[in-house]
Image 1 (cartoon, rainbow, N blue to C red):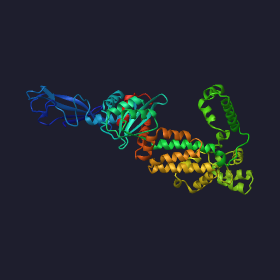
Image 2: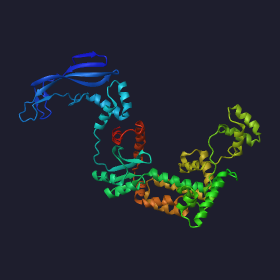
Image 3: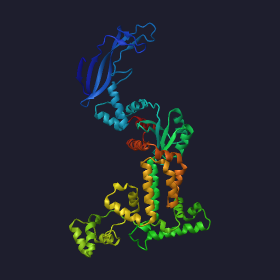
Image 4: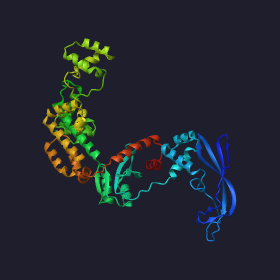
Length: 487
């Protein structure tokens, strides 16, 4: 280092190389004969938020090897300079990390604050120039799709399910694309996936000997949907809150159920029913599957209100036969700011009854799907009372706990017995779920037996959502792919 000076734009450092010889990049021969000298300007890492420019005196040497292809060459400094580079290695690395983290204009603004001089296009070029990570041989893969534009365009991310390392990002979720990628990378033994038929077909075509493993979370999520249908179908047995006999929602549900089944009795198809009634086809299917209108009647769902904070006091005073006006005065002294009509409606709905309030169907499903040891004592007792009030609910809770044991204990070999017993129970909403398990039997058994899952891939998908939102949908797929693989 020969001189350091401060300029209006930052700091300049004048330096030269002290080595007496240089290595030829073509033949790796040493040379001491100097051809010429020149100054090279290199942007370096900032100091105290100020940009630094390195004015490096570089020598050009003669190559003394007779059979070398070059006659002269410029010396390079390890870990500092590179051929044709206008930045030092540390400066380039810092800009690459900034570009990967933010991309585009946001990265340029941060770089300028840190003392680096780089525009958004320069940062994007640095990111695109980065090499893709080496894939190598991977035995266990995790495959999942993510939305580039929800409902329109999707892509596929492939990771190592053991090390959670991101391997590649494919531009779509077609079977042919994934199949071609799998053929290019031999050595795959297990592939973890969700219930996608396209992925299953791609794996069968490319690596037929590989074991397909269904994701355990998706198996449990599908069971949750089936449990919710059963809970709703038997809501009349466990719901202790009476519905108003003249409820508009009940009347509309009964009318719609009667209209759909009247057309079905005449031999009209589901699609024609949807056209005549002007409803969605899925709505027609939902009413057609229900044999009775009562299976579609749901208990009321109440949101949070101002009285909830004073529920215990209201229940206590109602048990003592205290007038509502006195209850209103007492809770207002405790900070209640609502109206008297809200309190009266709250009491008339039965939400302040001294006995326990019946949960919503979704809340009851969450209790059933939870591990009993993780529930509070009062919640567990309430759940036991609700499930024992109906034989079907008792059977439902038993089947859920049996499946949880299969899932956590990796007892996929017992799945057939569980399906047989569940079919004999004839629980509403379980037929489609059981059919799906049997349709993808090998992958389902492997998912309940092997220790691998698609959870790491879902975690990568969560991080991809952040990367997408940072660019507001303006980035290309190539840039998004680089950020996914290298961030």
